[in-house]
Amino acid sequence: MKKEISRRNFIKGTAALTAGAALMGLAGCAEEKTPAPQEAPKFKHVKVAVFSPTEGTKNAAAMLAAKFSDDVEFADLTNATSRTEEVTFAAEDLAIVAAPSYGGQIPMIEGLFTNLKGDNTPCVVVCAFGNRAAENVYANIASIVSKQGFVVVGAIGLVTPHVFASVAKAGHSRPNVDDNKIMTEFASKVMDKLNSGTVEAITIEGTPEVDFAKEISAAPKEFKAENCIQCGACAANCSTGAIDPQTLEIDETKCINCMRCSFVCEYNARSYDTAVKRDFIEGKLSAKKSVEYFI
Image (cartoon, rainbow, N blue to C red):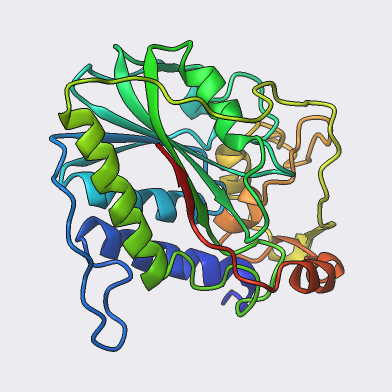
């Protein structure tokens, strides 16, 4: 069955295009003869650990990573099984750890990023947010990774499309050309810091602890049984293991409404009714916010 043109399909299509362009160093530089910003000095190897259910965060992290190195490795920690094995980083690596903002904090997943193991590895923390705010995400990630052998040398907030908004609102086409320039500026400053020979952790404001009792706004789920072919992709890719692989039923006590199941479903069987949130989101988040960073 051919999939309908939807919000999730738009994100999925642009995800592949943006990530590919980013890894070639071209992302954000192809509009109307806009010159590419001056490249920062390259790091030898960058390893990116990312939680990204609909891949907006992964796209943004890929764009940023390309500013630091032509040798980029990804550890995608979105699926529940991906977080069961230790992911190691060398002392000479640059780590980038990225997560989306869920109501101003990282997604409420026990043990998120705790399977990462650094060796006094310099680390940049990234928050992707849908044109609202990062709030405590930097502090959440920094608190976790600093206990895992990483030294947080910088933090950056990147605006990405809001999953509840239509394709032309609330973070649409972000990161863009201007964001690309700021990312290059940030990467250059981080590289200057690392090349100075002194790797010191920055101070990050915010609440480091994740509030697991916090209620996060969610869109109602929709399931079209007539479209489902029982392929099990939704269960295999669920970020919290909330979908039973046999019955495909969702355990709502585990579900964090990340929309991963609808993103990976190729038959339009699973979706979210984002229309109920769209008007509020687009009205509240219409003014474009800039990329912010801390060094």
